[in-house]
Image: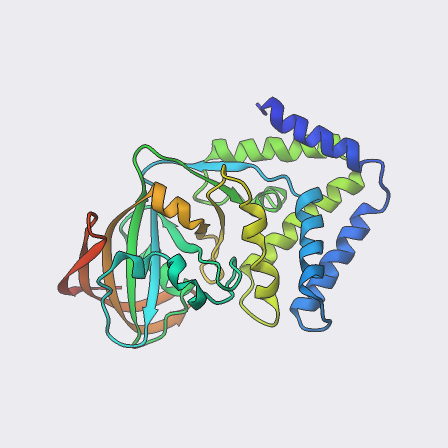
Length: 313
């Protein structure tokens, strides 16, 4: 059952958009230009990129927040060229404000705008580690430190799932999403289809497909000059903590980008691990040796390491 406020949001957008003709063609044209820019076939100024994305998100995206419950598991990886074990939790979490000059343009962040990237996992098996290694493009003989965290017991992370309606259209429920949550988004999708004209509904479908697509593309051309602006737009306001999307290399695996304030107030860091990457087989499958486990001293935000060479990935 949809809440009144959700229906009201869709009803108001329908009233505003349904009288406009050829709106799907306009959206298609914007997406085409952004794709041409990503592929370096045309040039666009930063304010043009922002304007195009503002139109797509502001008019043709229905953003609803999904609460991620306490004790949800998240891991974050950081890669090093030589053997190294971080002694400070902050080294493995996110780049602090004082060092923001080190932050380069990323998939969901602008330069000098720190953000926390992590992978959602559900048990202690190696599957989640494989995803984490793939997200940092780990190479053989590199060392990867991993920080394992959980949502604090009395907190919820409020996130938006970019491209969820395209997955509904394709009847492709993410394996990590419950049937109840997926059914809720299906109800939203159905209410939009009911209230919008065919042309307006098509415009919304195009937007969801585009956003889901570009967040799963491998880095090339001007891709990050487009995607880096999305988090700032989707994360406006205090009520939302982050965005969930799917891994580039590990098909269907959930990854997350969080505001740094959400990390500080809603995550509890549990432990750290250090891996030596032996082989990258491709398709987010690795041979890696667990060389050390780290205990977190939460009061001092430090990591105490203990050597371990018995487990491998």
